Amino acid sequence: MKYGLAVDIGNTNTVFGLYSHENGGEIQKSWRTVTHRDRTSDELGIFLNGFLHSSGIRVESIEHFIYSSVVPSFNPIVEKMVRDYYNTEPLRVHYEMPLPLEFVYPRPYEIGPDRIVNAVAASRIYGGDLIVIDLGTATTFCLLHGTQYMGGSIAPGLKLSMEALSRRAAMLPPIEFACPPGGVLGDSTMHSIQSGFFFGWVGLLREIIQQFRNREPARKYRVIATGGLASLIHGEQPDLFDQVDGLLTLRGLQIIHEHLQKL
Image 1 (tube, rainbow, N blue to C red):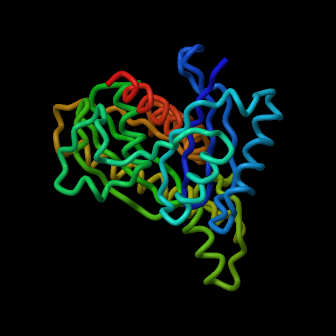
Image 2: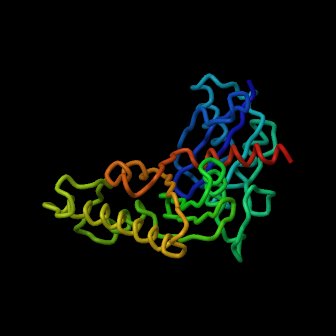
Image 3: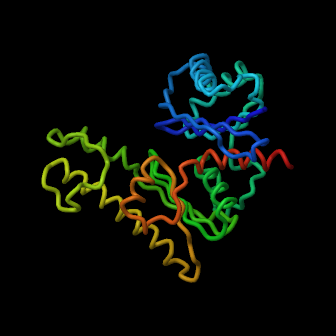
């Protein structure tokens, strides 16, 4: 069986997804690693081969490689690794590709590739009017009217904000993001910080979602969320998101590859 690799290179993590058109193109396996900007192409190749070997996948069976990246300095390393280890030409997602998406946006060159990929995936999989939220290093919101990309918002990333607080406030310890057991009223420093971040972020998400909806009240927007903390928030606040899709970006990369193959 022949496979493709979809790779999402983020500021914090790099996620690899394995798919095969023979199995309907769905993401079959995924792996996550920290994005090390000083990693060599050989180190990355050996690292990825280890993932494949542990899943019983032969290196020779990889025939496609598509990726999105918000770390430009890392792109040459990734592309050299692909050429050296997989003997194929890497495909990098960018806004000038013939994508199944129309940019109703004056500066499409400013849209991050991860946001483009998420928008393509959400549009194809869920359809209609959508608010797509990615809780990553930054918290991004994208507004879609069918296949039209209308724009969005960008807020700080949740984990980034938590790390900044613990670094700059000597008496406040680093904590895990969670809804504190006592709710909004913290009974300790740890629970107070958790309360502030959890309910503060829920408030941020809820308000931006509502502001988007207020622009055109006749539209029935669905909210699609992805990113590492989306499931945790959804478990505590099930009315906030309509759907959580942890593989949205990888699925978008696979969809883009499939779309380009048909042109």
